[in-house]
Image 1 (cartoon, rainbow, N blue to C red):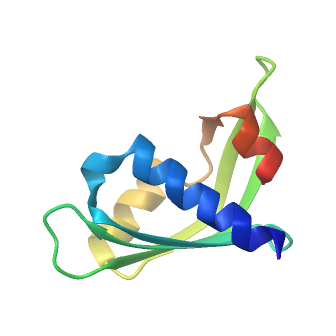
Image 2: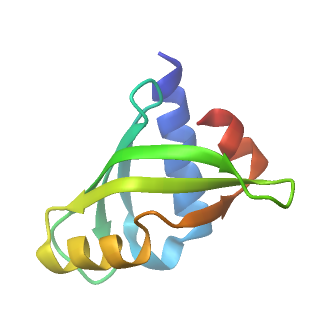
Length: 105
């Protein structure tokens, strides 16, 4: 039940933080904190069809600077080129996240 509220909050955060990437605010998020998975479905700016990105596993880790980071260990997309970019850019890298997001995950 709480994951649904967290999913909605994450959708809002993404819409506000990265509006230039989302076509007409078309995004949905399905977060499962128990399994540490998340699926995003969004129509990217300039595209006509939605793209799906699945995070197969993530961890929240200490940044060493007193903050928290998101570490994505499994990620995929239904678009081959996006899948390659995500694996090159996000997989096994620590991404600083706001404390409220770390607490939610």
